Length: 119
Image (tube, rainbow, N blue to C red):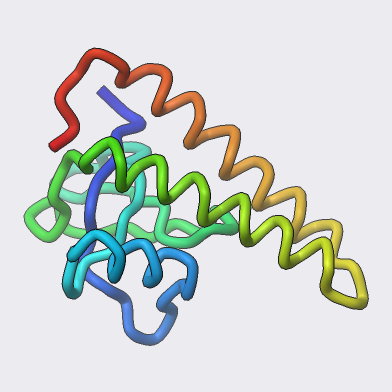
């Protein structure tokens, strides 16, 4: 069941600009695209940033599923974040590694959801 693409409420104190851009492009309003990683009681651990940061959110706040084109745009956004990180001086190799790990996770999740409805 997990990981699973989702939309979660914006976290204004830690809003990821790459996820915000995807939300704007796909009309997600005050939600951001993410990935449910695990369930912990009535809460969900959700990937909430392009560099792999997670948050534990109430399950009632998280909407499971994401249109496939928004999921692909999320992957594109992480690729853009990697490109931006590579061009930044000084080079932050730990951040690049976190971004690449996030991209790999998103790719695996998308492959696992092929054939399923994500809208």
